[in-house]
Image (cartoon, rainbow, N blue to C red; front, side, top):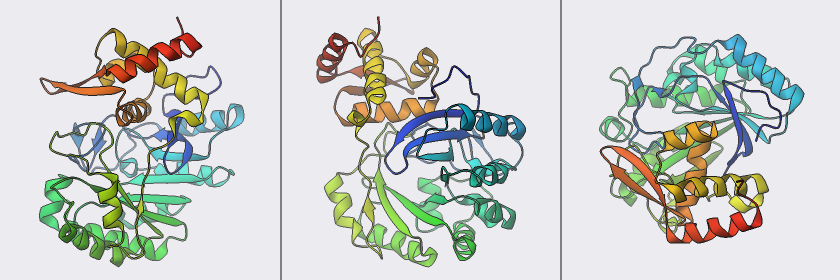
Length: 329
């Protein structure tokens, strides 16, 4: 967690990441501003679907916070542009990457790639050390089914934008594919995705599945063994993303224990947990995902809202952690 008492409006974490270690998040858009409305999104449905690029949050304030964090904390494995929506919708996201380029901590841009059709966006994204792009469809029909893009977006144009970016980008380009049961999990569907990925020639291909409650109930995960069986379809073979080890750092275990303690009292939504602890929604989502993966909490949907409740295993662990002093009074 951020060490000082400084309150940040646009920074959160560092949070545990399966690929980036301890990652400080930079949030450049209001919740949830995106060009897609992906069925698998851990943050829920998109409330502002747009392709309009503008200064959604004041860039000078963001840069001031980053400079303050570097001077007072500065302890992270990576600084990641992600958060509440699509970061490349911010017209000045490149300024953030240029500032980060002057510091030893590597930067990563997490994007759906939709704005890379624009040359100025490709130029700005080129300042990142790592760019991770999600691609889970293979044609216009599957694109509209899985990603539910803004009406102005076309799949073929998206692929051309990614190819153009690859041609000019000298950093690490990672492609992530979300595989969902019965949606794009068949070998035939995965082969079609692999054909598109091959056109882009990324440095790494990563297979992932739903680990936290998605925007739509029908976006169901597949087993890790099934993911592994699909990895060889890609050239080179894809990497199956494993969950982070929540016990690797004491503050992570303590945060999970605190959330468990809250859920022991009553079921809560993500928004209620965010409000109680003052954490960013992406940060809370990661902890909830790990608690669900380990069977300590359960998901319950009621009138369109997702509530989390402690499973018996989680209750037992929560009591043990409280006895150890991980949970405050």
